[in-house]
Structure formats: structure tokens, C-alpha cells
Image 1: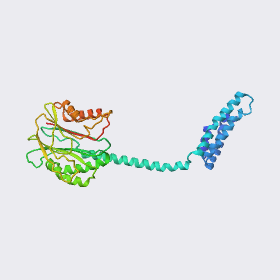
Image 2: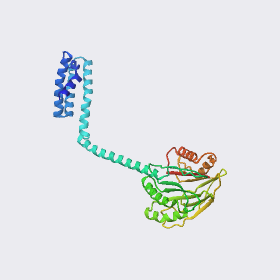
Image 3: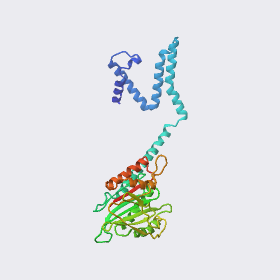
Image 4: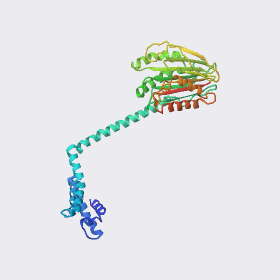
Length: 367
């Protein structure tokens, strides 16, 4: 208490001239230290608001009194102007007291706001964890083997997305042959709901990708996805297996975008056979495989529908025809797959003004 009084005394020392106090600086310090004690006692006893109101009234009278009763119109004008200015806080206070919310009512919102902020931060943290977990399911680096150059990426339109891709090299039951297994799955919808189905689908695919044929994998996982997804959810999926020794590409398609093959500068869609029902719609679908004989210098593009469905600020879609034109314009003969992938990524981001309409995933393969 004594320390606070001394601090107030030091703070107000030198302002004694306003109260017509004549004396040394030490005299002001003693006087205002005593006033500081009274001030602290008043604040503790009656509250800060009551003390501030009383102090305002006192200072208003003190500042206006020298002009009061003067016969000069200029002095009277100054007095009334100063009195009006000093009265504005009082007028505002009366209006706020009459029509505003009380401090107790406003104080009730603080815990609610703090709780909402805490919940918001917790949700953000959980989404960030889900995002990191989803990206960890994707391959950290592409597989390497003689005769292939493969690279892929995944761009969610929100923090998490419904796309999934993977590529692994295995023998697939063949003793003396290596097989590059590639897949892209695209769950309908966006954000967390789609991401949960994508994670579930990834487990089913990965458990069979290294040992079964593409059409067999789709036929085997179809019943499980049908029973574990609601009627509004479906998953498109494409599985491609490239046999490095024979250069045969086997494809099976469950309602996914048609892959694009570029050969000798000409890009074309590979028409995979029916049926092409997405996973989750029916419990049993007799998916069929399709074989393509690849050649050295060929370029294969697997992608999700977020690529052709990219929308520019004018509302125009990128489209499948533009995608074929884009693939033909790429320097697939000289650039490695990772640079080709980044070139596609930059072009679609620039086209859509960096606002993706849907999750976008691609896999580029050079033979």
C-alpha cells in the first residue's frame, strides 16, 4: 500500500500548479502521496467505476469554475464548450447504462467464447493430425528400377482429401520378374468424410496390390466397400501393373478417369473395358483387365478427376481435351517424371488461380 502511494505521488508530482499548490517538488510529492493513499482507499472501497465517475465530476468542476460568471462572451463561450466536451463521457455513460448490456451480462460471454476458441483450436489440431496421417499413407519416395521413371503427387482441395495413390515394386508371384504396381482411388465428396473412406480403401488396396492381378483386386474389395459405405458414397479406382521385363501394362478400372498414353508425340486415352462401376455401388462387379504393350519412350499418365475438373476464375473447366493437349505439349522425352509432374501441377494451379475445385492426384510413368 505504501509503495502504491509513493508511485502515485511520483506520477503526479509537478502537477500541483493545477491546484494552486506552491512549494518545492518534495512538497508536491508529499501532498500527492497522501492523495494517492486516499485514491487507493476509494478505489478499493467503492470500485474503480465509482471512483472514476467522482474524479470526473471533480475535475469537470475544477476546470470550468475559472470561466464561470465571467461577463466576457468569449470566456463564456469557452466555458460552455469545455463543459459540453467534458459532458460527453457522462452522456455516453447514461445512454450505455440505459440501453447497453451490463458488465455482468458481458462477463457471461467470456467463458463461452473461451470454450468455443478452445474447441476450435482442438478441431484444428485434430485436422492437422489427420492431414499428416493421410500424407504418411502416401509413398514418401517413388520406387526405382531399371527401365522406368515414375513419380506422383497428391493435392487436397481442403486440409484433408478423398484421394489416395500408391506405387510399389514387387514380384507379384513371379519369381524372375519385377512388377510396378500403381493405383489411384478417388472418394466422392471432400474433407474429413472422404478422407476416412480413402484411408479405409487404401488399406484394402495395399494388402493385395503386391500379389494380385488388377481385376482380381477390384472384384475382391468390392463387397467390403459396398457394406462399409453409405449410399451417397462411392469410390472410383484404377489399378495399373507394369511388368518391367515384358513391358506389358495391365489395367483395371472401377469408374475412374481413363489413363492417357503418349507415344511418338501423340497422346490418347486408353479405353479400359466395362464394367466400370465405382466401388461401393454394388456388392459384386465382374471387373475386367486390359493389356497394353508399352514401348521404350512411352509416357503414361494416371490422374484423378480433380485435374480435368479444375475451374478458372471465369468458371471454365480445364476439361479432358485440354488435358490431352497439355500432355502432348510436355517435354516427356527429355524431362524426368518428377519435373513433368511439377509442370502439370504448376499449370493446373495457375489455371485455377490456386483454388482447387477438387482433390488432384497424378502418377507419371516414363518407359
